[in-house]
Figure 1 (cartoon, rainbow, N blue to C red):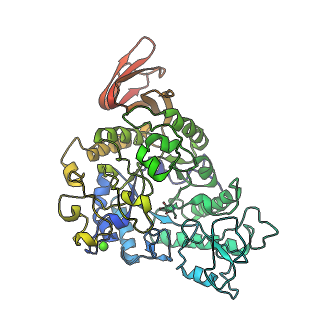
Figure 2: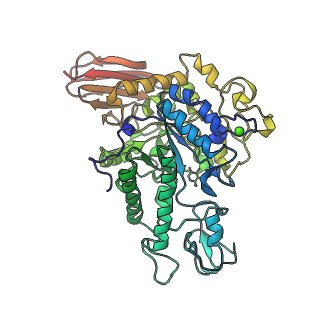
Figure 3: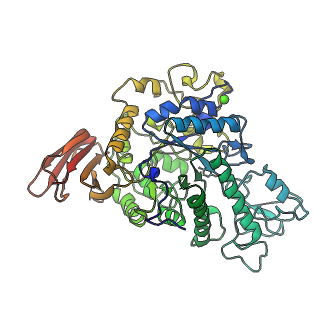
Length: 543
Ligand code: NOJ
Ligand code: CA
């Protein structure tokens, strides 16, 4: 069964707020310089205090860590540096006690070359894992896809999904070329066996207490699948397993094409930096465009005090996907993640507050990347760690306090997984806890508002009220039942105003949370006047 409006999966998802934990950089409890699972357990109350009720944990399984754990060598075993399987089960239990759910990261498309499956498939003699990965049948033959030749005695090249040590698991080809017999059809028993194995991995951890999976590179599984039909069929099959065996578990895509991902069966898809410049046009700063070479030709970001962005680049794409997925699944616009530059890059705390106001009042499921809640900065100039390259600067350890190593670890500074941001005034949780005006407390207020007012949650309707090409502010309304909430954000440094006609609304709106913006009645509607870098959240009741 694919996602339909009637069958949209677990009800808790619509109002969830997620927190992404990058385990190696979160909290080190045994002084070896690397974050660990007991560290995540120690901070569950903190995560809950943010108003979050779910966690996405980046890969924590055994791995040579060539790509920070996205190169798994045993899906059934926690990496010793993070702890044991028992620690992970304890994490599930302790999280559940506090009303938090825990989702794991499923690297479904590839493994490490160190995985025993791969070693077995690299053998010359035919065996039951010969087709577990995509191999050509001659080292001299190009695969038409990125591939590595000359790795083993087996004659052939293996197709890679990402780095050279991440061989692609074999889920088949959408339209196998009859002249290339190594391209197996999706329904080939060996491709179906790969699929079943992935299901078993999910079952194993869901049975152990996990609440779902974020699926890495979810669109990459079936090869040469230009219209994604076969890939979508594969996920519909996985979703059927969720519906029948784990109806309370969530399936989250890293696809960045919500209309497709949700039609395929995912409950949530991220709107992030690939496939389309929509996300990039909101947040990505000039240095990131240069460093990460994303969408070099897009207009400047909307959330930028220069005020040269264009909300329509985001909105036209977003509305298309929102309309197609409404009622069937959720689009998630994260504050950031471990693959992109920190949201704080090039932004002041006040600017970050405006961005957070938008992120926590949009439909879908908000995701806070650990450290973004205090405005942690991108640390530039770091040597690549575990395949991070330019992503490394967004992966530095959490800054908990003013203590040794910012409270992350008792190890010697030189032994830390990555150095702490060396900036003198680096933000910390400790200082922001006591400052009612801090970004941390701003986020807490927003998540409280989101919980208190279901119109702001995943089920509330969304309608732009003012969203003009090359103009600020951006104003939208969220409605559920008798409640309408109007949200206005002005990330630009210029004072602006806008007339809105939201239809029949009560004459006495209430400001729920505003900074620098006022709302006045006009003959035909309302006028919102906004200072530079400001926001306003106003509640109307139905007349
Ligand atoms: C996406 C992950 O988020 C990223 O960190 C990883 O390097 C690639 N997929 C490859 O698995
Ligand atoms: Ca540790």
